[in-house]
Image (tube, rainbow, N blue to C red; front, side):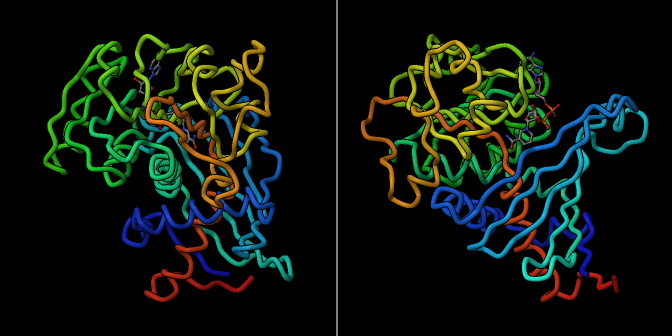
Amino acid sequence: MWIVPESEIAALVSREAAFDAVEKVFAAMASGEARNFPVVREALGHENALYGFKGGFDAAGGALGLKAGGYWPHNLERRGLINHQSTVFLFDPDTGRVSAMVGGNLLTALRTAAASSVSIAHLARKDAKVMGMVGAGHQSVFQLRAALEQRDFDKVIGWNLHPEHLSRLEEVASEKGLPFEAVPLEGLKEADVIITITSSFDAILTTDHVSPGTHIAAMGTDTKGKQELSADLVAAATVFTDEVAQSVSIGEAQHAVLGGLIGEGDITEVGAVINGAAPGRVSADQITLFDGTGVGLQDLAVAASVVELAIAKGVAIEVAV
Ligand code: NAD
């Protein structure tokens, strides 16, 4: 079995590699070659932690395994550790033997950013110029850095509940030589692409804040009850997702589905667009929405690519099991 420690991940995974792995696995999910297993997520009753497993099998890519981990809200203040903690375990699909253990913290940020990027690549207008951000937490910088590579943007605008954190986004924009402007929610009407990446439990963006032709990647809602977009905004958009079952239960679409505004049949897996089995954007004034709920197969796909590279570079540790 190979161990790839968290500390090695940054030097091993490029944004391009994460994008390729996630794009391929979304395509495999839509063609039925890869499937995610039901998610387990439990409150531990200890340290206020949420802990769980996201697993799956990708017959096309040969990845079998799970990501175990969750959210420990007091880590940073009490121990100087990041609050999201996870580890990916891979297994040999032919024998069931464990094949690798890979640090999952940075991988999570990279695979989540890769997911919104894949959606932008396939669904945003080609002439998109203004990139809008809602949220300025840990994930947001990864999201923005990856998104800026998908179109020829000339400006970044952003809103955050705590405006003092927007400087993080300004720094990422300036890496690309782009101006950044903090805006009120109404200011997001200027955006051609919007990523939402907050932990909100109430709608932030409504139809009043989004212009026709915008692509929205809603990435923050990954649990029952969370919400970033009003249900009528979701209903006004053409909805795409990573996995329909998660979109309607723990994703952004849950509220519009519960309210009877849309049904499962109105939601298309982005993998079907990648495969050419479903149309993506069909007009310049359509609002497209990617409901990125986060699937275990994303973690497995990126982790599997990391293990190969780590072995090749001599930084994977081999242990007998
Ligand atoms: P974080 O705690 O670092 O940042 C949270 C962000 O949400 C901040 O910008 C904060 O200002 C904002 N926020 C909090 N409460 C809000 C409210 N009531 N209204 C508006 N904004 C509010 O978290 P993070 O690591 O950046 O993660 C952000 C979200 O993304 C979380 O909900 C997390 O669970 C989710 N996430 C999703 C995936 C996925 O695959 N879809 C992957 C990782 C994280």
